[in-house]
Image (cartoon, rainbow, N blue to C red; front, side, top):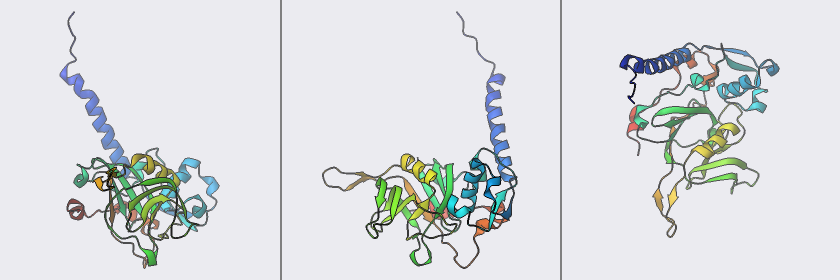
Length: 253
């Protein structure tokens, strides 16, 4: 029985449709504008909209309700990646199976697979007196719940350490809409849990405890300007988004 071959022109149609879809998605992302509104009452928003507003305003649900004004998109679409201020593609990370990039100035993280953005979310890094040091790190070990050795009242769910020497980790904790931690990188619960399962920790030699294979790359970039208003509360800032230092990423050590 002969095999019926699909004409080449027909085989190209699905690819063309896929590419058109990507172009439409990218175009849709560019056309989303933002404006400021009074925060209350938050009841006017759906649960899905509130989840996005927490990301846009760098505040968890409790702190979002305390804000006077919040940044709101002019339209709502299901794909949260279209709202990301982080670049959708970082070619300098194309050879990294997985990588986390934290931009301190914008208080946001991006998770990348082979240089393509797969998730983004808000963070709260170190406060003015305990600023998170920028640099190149890797995910080390994780714990479902980690209790700080510095203060036992600091209980951190979905904890993933990225600097054992400095005691720094990515984990769930309150996000007040500004840098407020003691050096760690705080995340929303939904993002911290996702990272806990997605990230890969280090591999240590069972006998010596020496490092055999580092975990997922973590790049902490830039510095937060404590003297200026939060940039994400300025609607025009969203048109620019985050510009990553590509030369620094390419030359990471």
